Image (tube, rainbow, N blue to C red; front, side, top):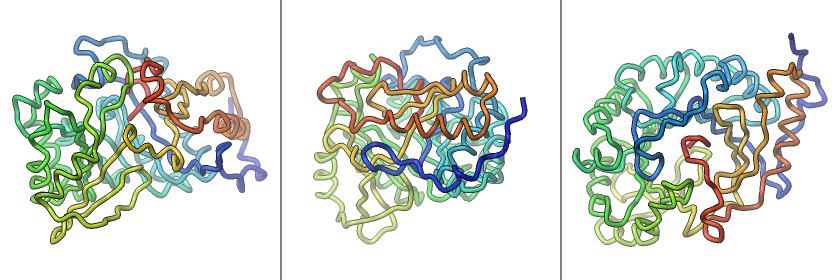
Length: 337
């Protein structure tokens, strides 16, 4: 069924939730599958993935993102699972980067497949990359992810060679796991002109709750780093929640993402679109809205915008990770990073 053109009355509307926050950022999951098994994210033997026929097609994804863009959303981050396991991702990225209103298209990845795809992704219009890297030690990296550190390093160097900038390294800070490597990661990022971001563990799914014993407040991490490096106020462009410091005398920015110790819900500007077409309004709540049935029942473009406007009214004021740590049972890979 052919959808009619966007109606003019929608074109001047903006996505604003009930608490006055403008929603200008969509995190788009293109798959819930991943070729690694980070123990805090997905069980080692997990295979209960969404059926591919339930995945939004490239055409459906483009329709949804076009609708968001017409309502004022300007930033899209492609995530997963591991997005690079989705076939023809550069083709989809190219379609999204050409949409009117989309000013920033970025990618979150584990970097293992960047060696072969970095150039095509850059050509498609992706400008920024966030890459997960929790350890610089091959054995420890394998213990955490079940993967090979050399594949990640090769991918990061390929991305650097392809001209991506910034490349942000995301390191989940875990007590007793990788807390002896923070300074080494700072030096690594200085050497390669990467940005470094520390992230607190979150109680999402059974894996996340089991990792709670490794929780480390990033206030402690910042205090520790300040004893070796002179940290001064810093800023980074982007739509995410990180609070940045700069290492004096270098170009390195270090971001601190603190959903537990210092939540940033009052400035949350994002929603997450899962691969099955479910819009999640909050990472730490179960508020959601199903778009796939509407898309496959012939919804018009104008009706799709109306559905998105309604979905945003469901966005909660804040997560409840501390009060109700067992509330979210889905794995992070199901929601999108």
